Structure formats: C-alpha cells, structure tokens
Length: 123
Length: 123
Image: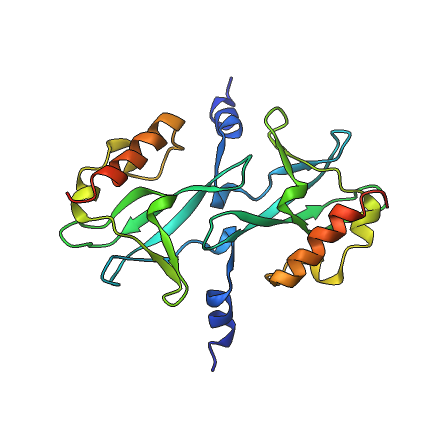
C-alpha cells in the first residue's frame, strides 16, 4: 500500500527522460540481467535509437556496459521493465564501439550494431 | 575551437536522455523563449510523447512550466534546439493539467492538449 506512488509510476505507459536510469532488463527466461543507464534519442524524429545498458554478472559476463539497439528491447507491462532475447555470446562478440558509454554512435555504427544483434541470435 | 566537443555533441543527430535538460526552444521568429526540462517517452514504442518546457518571460508570460506535445516541436539543426509556432495566447489558455511538471498525463489529457495546440493556433 505504501508503494502506491511508485507502482503507479511503474505501471504508467509513459516515463520521464530523467527517470529512465535503473529501469530493469530481463533475459528470455525473465531473469533480471541488468539496468538501463540512459536512452539515446533521435533529436528530429523523437524516437529512441538505443539504450546504454549495464549488465551485472550476466551468466559469465561481469558487470559491463553495452549499447543495445532499441528493437532488441521489448517493454513488459507486468515486469515493469524491458525484456530482451540477446545472449551472452552476442554480448561477448559485440563490436568494440558498443562497449562503454562514452560516445554517440554514427549512423554506420548503428547499422553495424543492429546487424550484429539481428543476425547473430544463435551465438 | 575550444568548443569542438560541445559543438560536436550539439550537432550530433542523437541526444542522451540525461543530457536533454536545457535544450533551447525558439519561437517562430527564432527568439529563444525557453528550455526543455525533460522529454516524456512512451515505454513501449520508444517515441517521445511530449516535452516539459520552461518558458522564461515569453512575451507577457513570466517563467512558467508547460507541457508541450511533441508534434509542436521541430528540431532545427542550425539552432541546435527546437522551434515552435505556439503562441503566448495558446500558453495562457492551456489546460490546467499541462502547467507545472508533476504528473504524467493520461491518454485523454494528451489528446486534449494536442487538440488545444493544434486547433487554437490563432489565439
């Protein structure tokens, strides 16, 4: 009952740009594998391009930051977080530029990253 | 020259969710009338729904916070900010729920607000 405020925000279909950090990410089995650090947005279209995500001890992977294309994240209204089917193998073989959280990606890098996660689903 | 880093980020087509605050908003004449405090994003689609914007002394209006539907903001790659054709009259007659920055809007409120700014352009 004391959590009404929080639950209400968690179950609301909208989220504020300054409240995104910490949104959980779950794997295909519903296990919590990380949290979103920030979303990166196209200034003109207003569409999210990708999420910078912190994975904490996902299977064999230690705590790492990875850029995940938006199309690999699917909001789950019951879990109040995003689930993804990306695998440990995909994260391990991800392009170097998609690790860490310093840079904004170029269009070419976004395409490369999108291809990596789309076509290497069974790594 | 010393601003290369900043210019580069300002001219990049992407923006990080935690760097949105302070993005300038310009009126139809190119005058800076306010800044974006936050964007509010649809969790499922990843599309921006609206912007919570601080207007500082826009014409007769003092410093006020207003919720502005996304379709009223158009990114200008030269100004590195959003321009809008909304008027002082529209802001003055905006629904009460769209003032201040506390709440997330319901679907009904979003529609009301969208209609207000779309059909009252000549207030």
